[in-house]
Length: 114
Length: 111
Image (cartoon, rainbow over all chains, first blue to last red; front, side, top):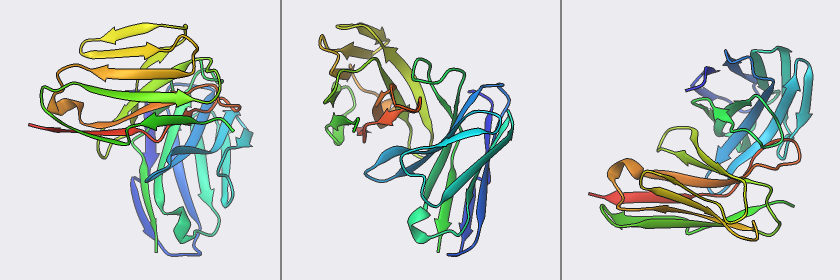
């Protein structure tokens, strides 16, 4: 498997608290992505990054922000968590964007907002 | 917007039976990828199809890309319990370089 580490793996927190999820890669890939997976929806893109400090919004970006200060780290922040953000979050990486190369996924973070 | 429709949503088979999942797009696909996700796991890339009418095999798995590049299928011959999981077809031509996932077919195999 590609060198992708997500942390934490599990988190339970309360509505209104800030939450930061981390994705760390050792592959030196340019592209990094955050997805959320919910029953009946498959995986949906939240934000993505195409280089250090270069990020853009995905399909379901409301309520989320991201930062990428180093090639290897991509952070996803929920500024004020809501119950609708309870989900499984996956980070993915690829060397090339625009769909001509497979994406490799981390093991996921299971986040519960009470 | 871009979307891929996948059927069936669920499939229960007896071990040794064959299994097929179908993927359809309303638009012509540049290419299509297939991923497998085991229960509790993360999506894992299986294959990418690029050419019209392309057929690729991986052991008991056969992947096809339609002539019009609007549909694809995954066929598993003689399923095993290790085949359990959700199979996703993915439009890899998302506008941001992301993947547009179908909702997947969840396969269960009864020993």
